[in-house]
Image: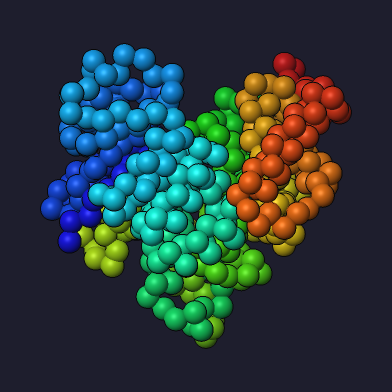
Length: 396
Ligand code: MG
């Protein structure tokens, strides 16, 4: 059956890969709409190629009308994204939006009963309890787009809940897996942006280096798969070849292996349960040779532990974790704080927070705003500035 698709965030890494996958399967997917942030050049090229009926851009995009065919409807801002998400002519919303921009359009799509395939971590980290409840009550599928979570989702779809004892999320360990705390205190944004296996945007690359990204995936897994966090483990796996492990009640493990190509999990999510040929390179096991597994070190990577804490606390705690992390990551990229201060800022923000139930989107946004102010205060007014940690070893 032909699926009519809205691709939100079409010029980002998830969006471009998703379009690549769907372009190769033209009898399955029709692109109805696209949305982009700053990259209007690529949006124009995508519009020429995929002929969407509607596009959405930021409010401040100028001169776009003259560069697109007259019949293409141009929408703007968050309201435009929500219009695309609830469009009657759309069956499936592919959400590759970055950060908090992704939350409201996802909620709107789920409320409209759309199937939603989402790579936007913030949606489930901040509002997992609301979004999964809405998906249940409105009947649309909520599917992860992620190299680890998509194969887990696919494997769990094929087994009964009773069969599964736990899931294991592999983490690449990032560029500082083997670094000491002293070395980590002195790392520059450039070094942290150099991810060993995946090419991604700056925010998620820093989140991968701190293991916050893996912690977010623990929280997402809790909501996507309805599993308590003590049934979700993380293991460091440097080769990024094993993308998920499922442990069954009989003690056996099933692993999912593939080459590192984002098009593969995206295709798995979009064409499930069918397996179709893809453009991803087959995996050469002999070339890979050895696969290694280590425990994550929570002393050097406290962000992972903070994510487990946040989901145990529940309510507004994960929203505070997420917002404080965004502020801390920006401060690190601007060289206002050192790398090891990222978890310190997040931890201090969470400690200062008076947890609320967070049973509405507004309550979660309020917690988000509070946490941003708090984290910014901690960054500017505290002992977490550059001198406390970032100066160690720098320039020597
Ligand atoms: Mg991942």
